[in-house]
Amino acid sequence: MQTSRSTHRLGLPKALQPVKSFLSPFFAIPSFPPSFLLPPFPGLDDAVVETAEEATEPAEADITGLCQDMFSKMATYLTGELTATSEDYKLLENMNKLTSLKYLEMKDIAVNISRNLKDLNQKYAALQPYLDQITLIEEQVAALEQAAYKLDAYSKKLEAKYKKLERR
Image (tube, rainbow, N blue to C red; front, side, top):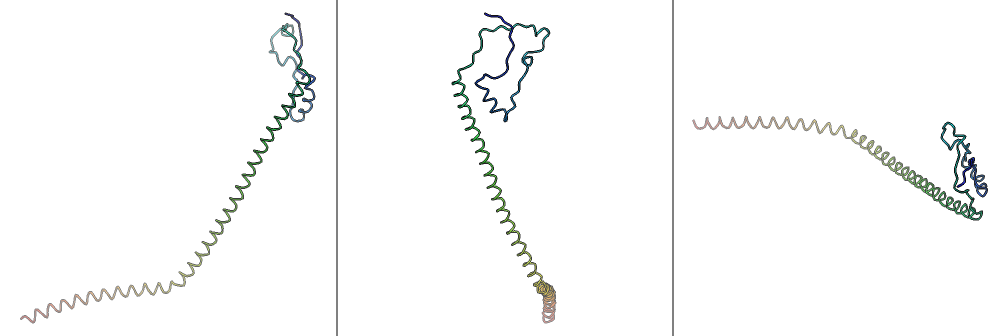
């Protein structure tokens, strides 16, 4: 096992540098100093790092193929997300149109009801004198009925008196 003092390199392998330059306008790819990865302990600068073997970069063709695969899958994913969002907006647009049509129908119904109510109020106002006459006639009929009951009761009394007198 080889013991050596090494510094950590946080950059990307050479094969991924074009990917970093392609993605940098879309994503912030920070570069951190080596001390960022290590906890702040006293005497850390003098620490010795043991490595079992050197990290090797994958072959250029493998990385290129993997990057192309990643980008095609990312494009498929983003296309799906954008399609779903677009479909959501289309659905909202259709719902808004239907709601607008429903409110227009409701407005037409309310206008018709208002117009019919005004017509009924005018007809009721035109009938009001006749209704007043009917009420007056009804009161007179009720008074006449009371007079007829009184007359009937009086005639029965007279008839009873007449029969009483006749028997004598």
